[in-house]
Image 1 (cartoon, rainbow, N blue to C red):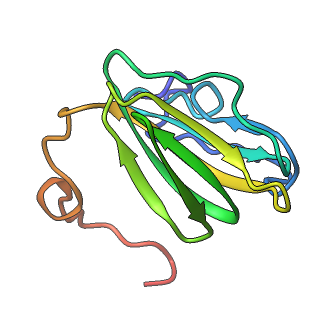
Image 2 (cartoon, rainbow, N blue to C red):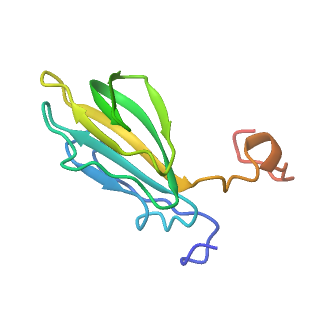
Image 3 (cartoon, helix red, strand yellow):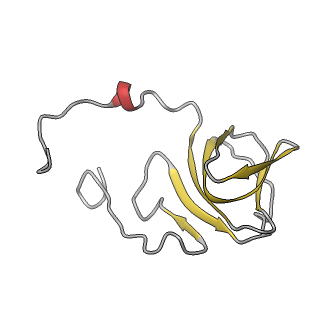
Length: 131
């Protein structure tokens, strides 16, 4: 349960289209994943190549285009692209010189998913006002 005593966390993030990085781990008291909303200004790169000990990453490109480096391969990425990287994958991301790059990154422990939407979800006998 959430430290607030409720089964959920809701926070206003403000203007999520502004430049910068928004980390949701603490804001939402996340316990099974890390989620960030990121923007790299045009021509800017994450300043290091990195891998992870345990976490895979899923990226969803929201706007712009850029370049992705994974294990020596370099390829272009653009709005609408989604990709997953194993923990051991050496990675780096860069915005195109003519375009800022806005993306969501989700980290979760690799091989930890035991169920998902249809196998983890259960019907509950209550309804919101709109049903």
